[in-house]
Image 1 (cartoon, rainbow, N blue to C red):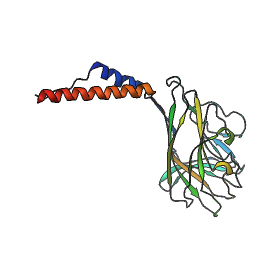
Image 2 (tube, helix red, strand yellow; image 1 turned 90 degrees about the vertical axis):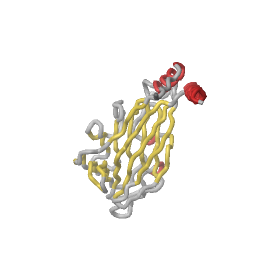
Image 3 (cartoon, rainbow, N blue to C red; image 1 turned 120 degrees about the horizontal axis):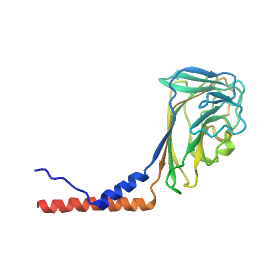
Image 4 (tube, rainbow, N blue to C red; image 1 turned 135 degrees about the vertical axis):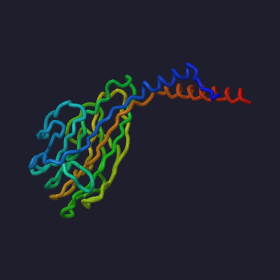
Length: 246
């Protein structure tokens, strides 16, 4: 007869306690419908489907995605390129530091009070090198804690520095994580060319695809201790069962 392992109540309680604190929240965008968004517009609020002036508070809508081309002749569109459906921004003239892809108002509320939050992100990026003017080197993933606005001055922390291809056909996959303090109720991510701006004068542009972000609570130290107790309990039960069978 096959025996059934029954875990002690304190082990079940420990596991339940840990799982209750392992909260996650999904963000990001998957661009699925090829269409022209706007032409000759510096910035576009993709979430609200409207142009953005580039000044003032863009709003507090959670998971708000804004792309700044900076130049007034920037074109925004959703296109199919190199096997992916992507957001494409074509910019003209050298861009300043505010250029980039913004994911704003990530919601950190409703997690355990004072608990740090782990933010995991991933995306694909590709350059459209029409005249050799694009600089795809030393781009950055920047982030901020607290209230966010459109403008690099709000994004003071660097999560990652990366480079990508500008050959119009080779996607570069980027992923990483960063931790925000438990005192923060929201934050944001900016993908751009760092402190030097985009650094080019070109009629080319950039593609962004498969942008995914996950916000997860980090178990408090007491929960790690509880996990250890749970594991010890499971091992003890298994050991007793083995001894009975001998």
